[in-house]
Image (tube, rainbow, N blue to C red; front, side, top):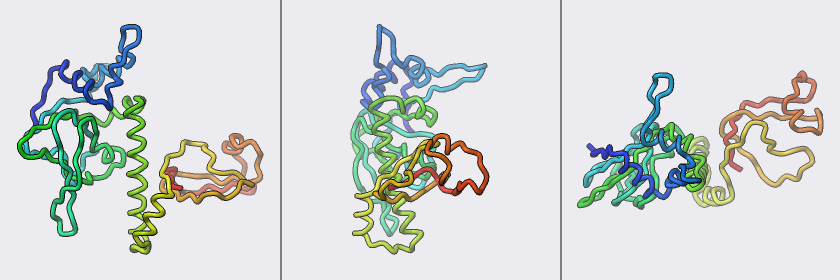
Length: 255
């Protein structure tokens, strides 16, 4: 079991050393810019007699100790490596753990399981002969941390990469591996996985066809001959003869 360092100043020092979320400690006019967020991360707060947070724990793992394990459900926590080294393993076709990489200091891991609601896709272990110090961060903190430039940008990149890779796996599964690896690699290089907000316009009549859009989850609406005002059309409540078609699809797309 890991050893927790509960001293608040040590947790703050770890946030400062994290790189990814050190922006939480930025100041303006001698005040923390994200004072409330920092308080929730390190100390927690009481709202209507209910305790919320703290969202961050500073943990020290011993040599050869696993932090996350492949296949385990861990949708409530992710981690940032503050000090030490970590090895990454995945199971091969025979179920044997094979080392596939390492986690470097100031890098996060485990967040894709939180975002996607899926089991862990790798095992992360402390190598022999060393210790590793990590920040364990609870799921609710994502809402606070996404506004940070460094963390938010890297999280978005990781989510898009993971989303695309997962979608390609699902395509292969749905087609009984009909696509050759070379074609999948070309498709991966040409595609982009993204999430569109409500009322986002994917394309309009008369525009040249420049891309294909595969809908992964959510709802899209097709509107024809209502008005040239797209926002007005999106909220129009006319009948079926107005040329509107609703499609059960999902707003996570790759194009």
